[in-house]
Amino acid sequence: MENMKGRDKLTRIVDFFNECGMLRKTPRTGYQFLGTGSETVAEHSFRTAVIGHVLALMADADVARTTYMCLFHDLHEARTGDFNYVNRIYNNSDRVQALKHATGGTGLEEDILGYWDELEETVTLEARLAQDADQLDFILILKEEFDMGNAYAGQWLESAVQRVRTQWGQEIAEAITKTDHKDWWFLGPDPEWWIRKNGKNKKK
Image (tube, rainbow, N blue to C red; front, side, top):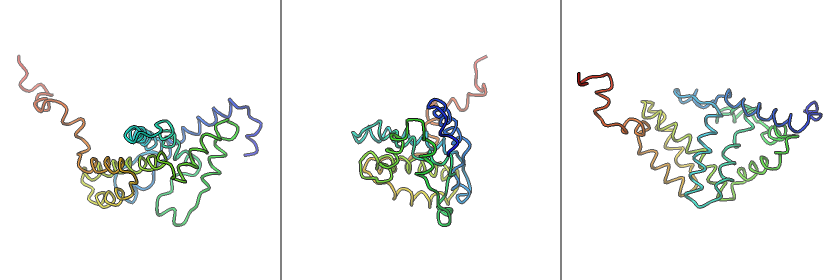
């Protein structure tokens, strides 16, 4: 990254923003084994941050720190790509080096690398909540795929639930397994709406 050292701080921040945008184009790779579903790293990171925010409120933890750890937890994948569990048997990536290169010259190095170190050490409550948020987003995806008829997703779901660390994460995980993924929109309207929506029984 020698060629980047001459760039001023604002330019490097714009470089950083452009790099974050790559996560929109970076696919999560485990779905090829699951057989259904797809998402980008950016999509995953957004909901993980939302979940982490809520978990921190439930646990009376530091909401901002938990949310930031979630937001940046897969930032390195803009450079490394997403390694699924099979990939990791054969491939290694230097995630810390990727983050150092991504943040170098931006003034963000200490913050983002600090979040990364805390998340990886998983000593603080906030780090454990952020780890849970990562799993809970995956659990939501698996429940949706299971609801849509992928029986194999049910097997993955059982394993993923066991990886949740905190009592608050476990409570949410249990609720996910009992909730149909479409309830939030399908059950909202008056049931008659689904019959009337094409104009049937409309008064003339």
